[in-house]
Length: 108
Image (cartoon, rainbow, N blue to C red):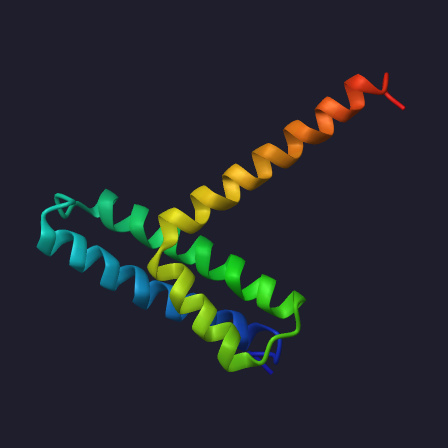
């Protein structure tokens, strides 16, 4: 079997993310926010796919129903830059808090 049951939902999430990212790119192009270069397109798609996969895996971890997961994928990938930026900020703050705890407790 070429496509297993585990790969198909991920492929759907990536496809929805690419579709949403393309829509975001076209809207930004129409509004004049981007120049329309290939690099602009790939950047928008990268953020969309990253945010979409983050939503997919969080939804799977929380055991949401598939329609809710795919809705979250579309919502997150449509706001890809903001979602990735927020996740980066949360991650940075968590790492900083752990490092601070290590040094204030003397490594214990």
